[in-house]
Image 1 (cartoon, rainbow, N blue to C red):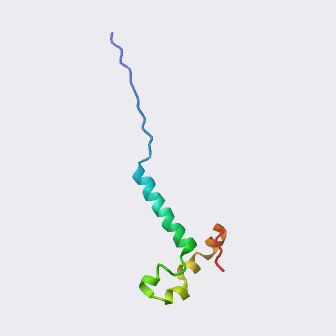
Image 2 (cartoon, one colour):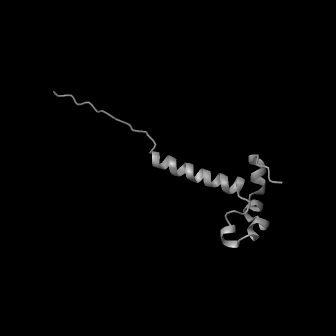
Image 3 (cartoon, rainbow, N blue to C red):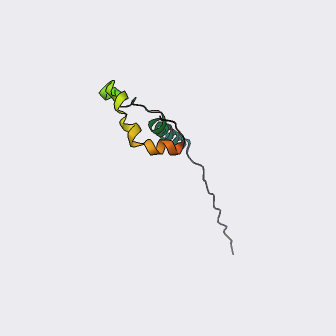
Length: 71
């Protein structure tokens, strides 16, 4: 009789590309919520975006919860 043994190899490495994409999304989200003071909309709206602060007002409470000073 011959015996057969099953060998299981598990590979649980996270691909570096997915970590890099997640880091980019995180950095953009941090900029968007924490530091954007009209910079993104100024591309389209010009100087008026610095006065309206649409993203700032939309994420105002989240900014305070995250510890960003905004006024």
